[in-house]
Image (cartoon, rainbow, N blue to C red; front, top):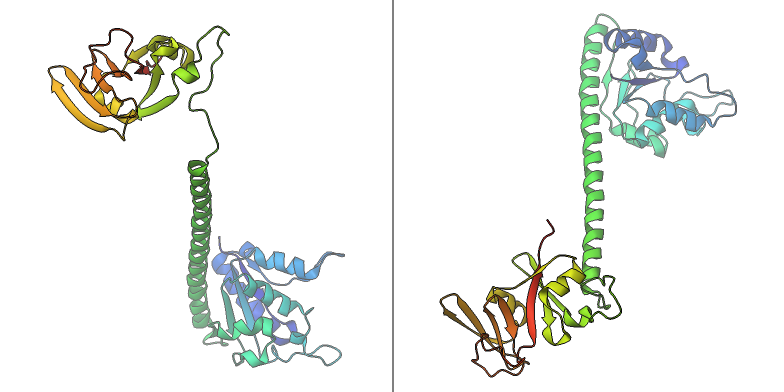
Length: 323
């Protein structure tokens, strides 16, 4: 529902303002039109009260008659120059909120210029207004005014929604930048952090942190590097880490993931896929017979099937999904 605040001076335009109000009430409803702010409660900051009353509306009509600019108080001082002037306070509240403010020129009044107004009201001189003349033009002028009010309210709502949308976008960008900063900080954080959380284990259990010190993700699957010389197997590592059975890696890509800097040559023979690596181990990294293996004492070219004699040192395992 539209809510319209009518600002006017009684000694300047009370009669015509009453007629304008009647016409607006007939179009928008009595509860949508607000005029006099006379009953300010005792002890209340009158500017804050007026600001609150104006802030409840979507549009302000400034009824300007011939004496609106130069009306004086009992001391002969111009009312607009007094910060306590009600009309000035109403106008300042509306202009500060950037709501639609429509000057209504009555009784052949002219639009005030910026130099005739206090600095706080100077934006009023740039607001587009219209005259409301007496009969026989009153009805036609009011029809134009009502059409202008409806258009102004639509524009005001559009701008309000746009400001809200821009504020939402700005807030989202701030959150996104904070998340990006947090992600960057996390990525560059060089503080030591264990890759695998340490599960409870008996004091006599092998040190699985040493045995499964490296972790890689290949095709979305997490693999552990297990040092066989620590006395662990795929099942024993996974029972400690995930409390599920383990499975040897069978894809040579897993071996390559753990040795990306090695000179790699892939030899395929039937179901065998042997990845020959020249790495620090100076041995082979292979996917063969259900295991990826690094043989620290093997010579280049020795297949994984020649494990005998405890030559192999590391295997790669993944843990089964529970259930």
